[in-house]
Image 1: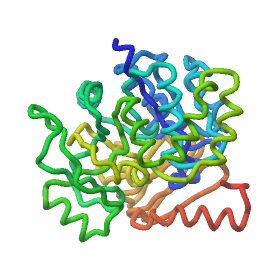
Image 2: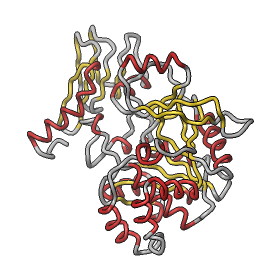
Image 3: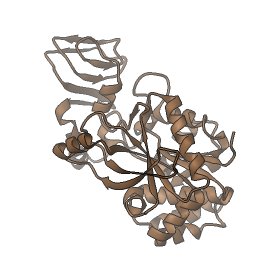
Image 4: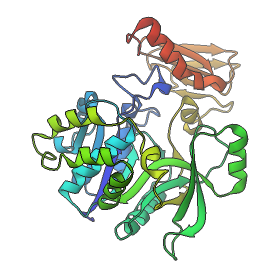
Length: 363
């Protein structure tokens, strides 16, 4: 296996849209939503074992989740867990990871991916990543994976690509535009145009290319992390990072670099991807009964005259639902949520209201 291939898995989010199952102290990446015996982060880690050596997989997460990482991924060494002292979005965590990896191996090629996505077609995913990594070794480019859309989804960002390709004989295209979550009409026009992809938030680049881009587009942040050159992979790393994050701007890699750089490319891909951003995405991927109910677990849930519901309740609880259609029913951590599926985008607002009324007790 190529020793220059590295993976940086981002696992610091709190997953508030999956409340009440996902909590601040135990967020969605550490949960087995489908009852398959593996959490999302465990599945992600195993996926990247097919691409790079285990010692080349790094996870960047909030420091409060370090023990969860060690518990769920016991083969990871302390040096492979990058503990962030505070949330500062994706640009700082990628800058941290790229700087640390570059200090270990200046010739590294890195794939950056979230910890909470699902991939149905593993071989197609691995093939796409490896194709991009082979190109990134020799090209000064920033590559992202774009998912071929099958519906006008308003929950995703979109990438428009040009006919121009990175090399004559490949299908990695020059990026024209990035668009944040559009309204329905705009999403429909994107789908009809045929040159728009969903933004999967998965990136491939060499350590040299991303650090060069950071230096050009986020020079202050680049300077901060360059300052840790002698601290990375030593006992001084934690103290350095604690100070560095206080100086960092809260900014995404998309806004900070990808939307500004002129060497950004995208590989149109189709490997059964879902970002599991909402309960609706869990519903879409879960097994359903003949009337469209997705019940996890299903042993002690009885449904009468009910259809198209997403139900996630404790295994030991008997639950009877009658006359309920197109609803989300979720119980966890002494909290019950019943919400129309069409209004699930309000869950994040509900969480804010609960926090305002009860503090952190139920969050």
